[in-house]
Image (tube, rainbow, N blue to C red; front, side):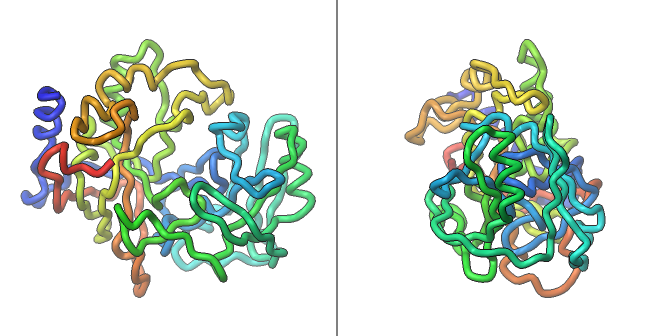
Length: 323
């Protein structure tokens, strides 16, 4: 425990020097919850996260969300958006579509600007409400692929609000993410993990929104506040990892133990956060919110690949880090 605390303490600093501590390596957006992400050169900030991120999800016959925790084949579902969809002022026309592909299936096109019927009793984790139903063709496509009744739904921004946990981020909103609008992970953290894994894994196992490079491994643990392109991201909670990092995102096949077993040796609550209750949970990455999402007036609310990352405030010790 002392070794972990000492390591975390060594990651402090850099916030007052005026020099960037890292650079944005990748910006990733996941339009359909638990399906493959899209690496983009830039993404605009909205009130609920990056534009298009987790705006859709798949639900069962009871309206409950499907994720890779149960349906690992979702890892095989590719999503394509129009390239211009990530420009700040872009608005879809009736001719613009999200294109979905999966092994053994013909491409499915989902219009981005067509009004849909609303269905009630859609739920993900603690939240329940209404959502737009993307229709019979999408339902048949996903039901065929997964082999069980499935519907594709879109978050209903006109009538619904899903707030983040007020114990960590009061007043912020998200759509169908697990709990927070952004996940920040460093390449250094992945590299450090891969040095001790028998078989290295890619970053897609951890599904970050912002991948940074140039900082020490796990530096993001202690980032209480960072600036990226004049936007303020606040680290609100270490990301406790579930089954998904064990799933090979190219095959949809889970590993029985890795990387969770290795992370358990040095990234568990018992090692990192001895004062916290959940000793067995493993942590990788920092959940975050963007302060400017509370007021979206003005332009330039974009995160781009290559943007420098400045730490403006750090947690002073591992015991201060929320988890």
